[in-house]
Amino acid sequence: MSRRYTKADLEQIVSVQLENLNAMHDLLSIMKHQNELLNSANKKLKDEITDSKQKLYPTRKRNSNS
View 1 (cartoon, rainbow, N blue to C red):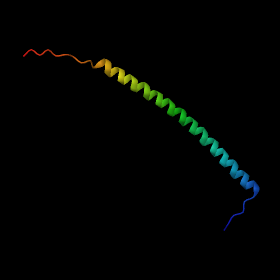
View 2 (view 1 turned 120 degrees about the vertical axis):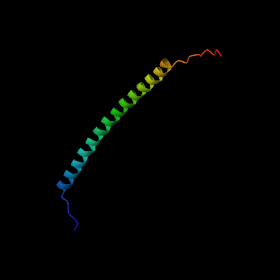
View 3 (view 1 turned 90 degrees about the horizontal axis):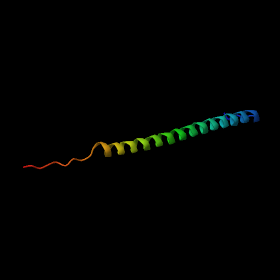
View 4 (view 1 turned 135 degrees about the vertical axis):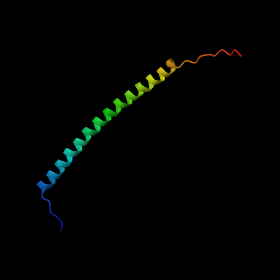
């Protein structure tokens, strides 16, 4: 039941594995870049929300004329 591989078979397997590893590396690099962009966008949105809350909701003093 054990299969015997030739040198050419093993070289092809290793070559395909290397291609797959390179493709995964490329995808991970893209995902890392996307993650950095998302973190940057989230920070900007958080800052904008914080700024708008401080500007839009000033407290008013009420006159108590009882």
